Image (cartoon, rainbow, N blue to C red):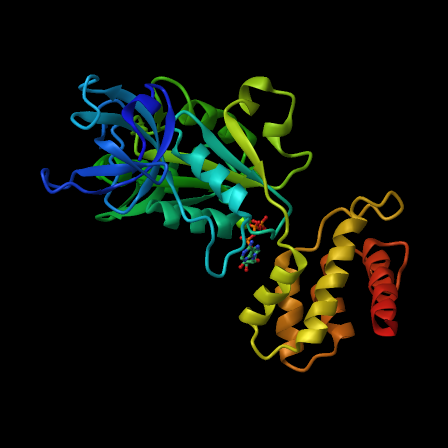
Length: 369
Ligand SMILES: Nc1ncnc2c1ncn2[C@@H]1O[C@H](COP(=O)(O)OP(=O)(O)OP(=O)(O)O)[C@@H](O)[C@H]1O
Ligand SMILES: [Mg+2]
C-alpha cells in the first residue's frame, strides 16, 4: 500500500484505469505504479483533453492531492500524459523500446515523429501497427505522388459542366484527412507522410508551417483554410541519404521532427517472417538466404564495395517466394537480390557484379560449413 505522503505533486506515475461507476464513461483507479493506494486516483483532463478509457494504462503526472490531513479520504488527481501501448505486435517486428519511444513522441502534440531507415526495413508496416495499437485512425499521404507543390493541397481536375468543360477542386489526401479530423473531434488521427524524401522540396518546406506553430493550418491554393485540429498527429518516414532534407544542417527544420531510426529485423525474425509469408519455402535455404542478405547489408559500409543501397526485407520475401515454388537458391538470389542492383551479374565492374560475387562466395562458405 502506498501512502499519500509517499506521493508528491509533479511525480510521474503509471496508472491502470478502471470504469468509475459514479460517472458515465469516466475512470478511476486505486493503484499507482501497480501498488494499491489509500486514496482514490482520478484523472484531470481539463488541460490536455486526454481521456483515458477503462482498461488502459497511462503515464500520468500528479497534479493535486486533496484532503492532505487524511490518509484515506480524498483524491490523488493526475494528469494523463501518454497512453502506454502493448509494444509487441503479431506479425510485425519492432523493438519494444522503439515502439515505446514512437508512442511517446506521437502522443506529444507539439512533436512530430520521423522514422528513418533503409528501404524495406518496415517503416510503413510499423507505423500502421503502432497507430492501430493506439486506437487511432491511420491516414497515409504518399509523398512520392507530391511532385509539385500544389499536389500537397489538391488539384483542379477537368469536369464536364453541361456542354462546357470546367474544373473542379479535388482535395489531396492531406487536405481530405484534415477535414475529416475536424469533422470527427472524438477520434485521433495519425497522418503519415510516407516516402517523405521523395516529396517536392517546396511542398516539404511549406509543410513545416503546417506541422508546427501556435496557429497550425493548411492554406489551400483554392482559398480554403483548413485548421489542424488537436486530434491530428503527424509523422513521416523516409530513407536516410543526400535527399533527406531534415538531415540538412537546417536547425529549424530538423528541430520539428524527433528522429527515430529503424533497423532491419534481426536475422531469426526475418527468417520467421519469410516462412510465415511463404509457408512452403524450405527453412534451411531461407536461413541461408537471410544470412547472405545480411552480409550484403554490411557491404554498404565496406570501403571496397560501398553498395549504393541495402537489400530490403521485400527482397528476402521474394527469395522465399521463389524458393517455395521450387526455384534454386542461386537463381532466387540472383532474381530477387542481384537484379536490384545496376549493371550485370557477369560484369564485376558493376554493382550487380559485385553483389553476385559476394553471394557466390558466401554461398560456397555456407555450403562448406
Ligand atoms: N519489422 C517488420 N515487421 C514485419 N514486416 C516487415 C518488417 N520490416 C519489413 N517487413 C516486410 O517487408 C516489406 C516492406 O516493409 P515496409 O513497406 O513496411 O518497409 P519500408 O521501410 O516502409 O520500405 P520503403 O523504404 O520502401 O518505404 C513488407 O512486406 C513488410 O511486411
Ligand atoms: Mg514505406
